[in-house]
Amino acid sequence: MKRKVIYIAGLYHTGSTLLDLLLGNLPNVIGLGEIFKCFHDKFEEQCSCGKTIENCPFWGEVLSKYDSSFSVDESYELVLETFNDQYSTDKILVDSSKCHPFKIFQKKDDRGMQGLNSLIYRPDIDLYVLHLVRDVRSWSNSLNLRDKRYRSDHTPLENIYMFIFRSTFFRFIQWYVGHKRILQFINKNKLKSLRISYESLSINPADTLKDCCNFLKIEYDEFSDLSNSKSHIAVGNPMKLRSKDLGKVTYDMRWLETLSHILPSIILLPIMKFNQKLTYGRKDIK
Ligand SMILES: [Zn+2]
Image (spheres, rainbow, N blue to C red):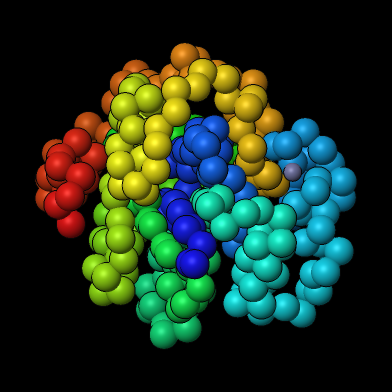
C-alpha cells in the first residue's frame, strides 16, 4: 500500500507552518515541517513535539543515521524509512517544504521545487499537493516588514540593490513568477492538487481544513487546541504558533494599513487579476 504524503507547495511567508500544524491535528496526519530545509538549513533547538531535536523521537532517530554527504533523494529516503518504521500505513506524512522557483534560468536539475522534485519520482507514495497562496499585497507587505526588522548598515551599492529587489513592485513580479512556475510544475507532472489561500485558512480555518479532508479523502474531526498536534516540526519557529488554538488563528491584516501596494496594484494589473483568480477564485481552476 502506498503511503499518502501531503506536500505544501507555495512561496515563503505564506503560512505553511500554520497549515502544517493544523493538518497535524487531524486524525492520522503527522506534520514534519520543511523537510528540505531541515537538511539545507539549521534545525530549531526545539521540535514542535516539545522535545529538543536530539531527543525528538522522530528527528533524533533521523539525525542518528544522517550523513551530511547525503543527496536530497537520499535524505528523503531516510525520512520516509524512519516514518515507515514509526507509523502505521494509514498515517499521512506532511512535508511543508514549499518552493523557491525564482532562478532566472531553471535548469533541469534545479532544486527550485525543493522536496517536490524528489517526491514525484517515488513509486511508494501517493502524493497530494496543497498549493498555498497568499494575497500578493499581504505577501509583499509581510516581506517588507521582515526586511525592516533585519535592517543593518549597507554600502551605497547594496542600498541600490535592495531598493530595487526588495521593492513592492519587485515582490509583485516575484510572486507572479513563483506561482506561475508552481502551477506549471503541478500541471506538467499531472499532480493531484488543491489550492488553498492563507486568507481562507486564517479567516475560516475549520472550513478550509474540511476542504483539505475532502481532497485527501479522510475524515474531518473537530478540534480546537493546536497543542494536540502530533507534528514534529523542527524549522520555522513552530513553538510560536503552537500556543494558539483554532479559535485564535488570526488573519494578518497589517497590509491594509499601508499604501505601498496601491501603485503596483494599478500598474501591474495583470498580476492583480491573477491574484484575484488564485487567492479568491475557484479552487479547481489551474
Ligand atoms: Zn519532535
